[in-house]
Amino acid sequence: MQQFKNYLLATLGFIMLVSVLTTTFHYTGHAQDGPVRKDFRALNDGNEAIPVSGAVSVTNSPTVKAQQNGNWNVTLTNSSAIGIAAGSAVGINPSQNTVQIGNKMTNPVIVRSADQRQPFQKSVSVAWVNGSNYAAESFAVPTGKRLVIEIVSAEGTFEGADNKLLTFSIGTTINGTPAAYSLPFIVQGAVFSLPSSTNPYYYYAASQSLRLYADSGTPVSVKAFRVTTTASGGFTMNISGYLEDAPEAALNK
Image (cartoon, rainbow, N blue to C red; front, side, top):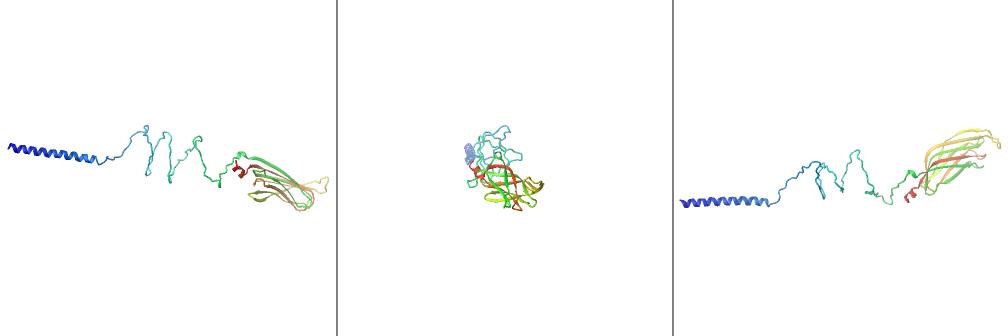
């Protein structure tokens, strides 16, 4: 009987030992399969920044709040878009940034300063010549400049009631194409004959605000046409505007 009890206790002890060993190896084997992955959540408040280095990838479309600490280098790829809120100010620090324009020499970007415009005015007087029904004169635009005409005025005299004015005109050339522009005029009236003439002199006047262009080195012509080809008289045309650098001259600066 005592011997049976000894066998029974030995058997129970062996079974308990096997159970303990089996449980131990089971958990150890699972631990060796790899680390357990869990989400990480930082609970720092707004005054405690988490330092991040290297590349950070953000997927989907979440809202990310970040506070700069030092210089940031941001690279946009593919069709990335940046939105700027209304009223935001965008600035460039000239000591640390360089702006480059990618235009080629065949399509240059022309930059001009309005402060470099030079005031211009010219008075041209022309006398009528017997045998001709028109009088004309011209002057050349300075080399390297383009003339912009803003106002033109003219006045003319004719001897005799039958010697009437037809037109005042001014002509310019831009991009190789000449064109003439007529000025509307009115008759101012007649004055008594001069000592050397038995006919009264009639006065005509015109004034027009406009904007005309004349290329560098091209002529600016002033003309007047009348009905008859005889009798004395003449006209004066006054031109006002400004000179600016010609496009080709501006490119070479």
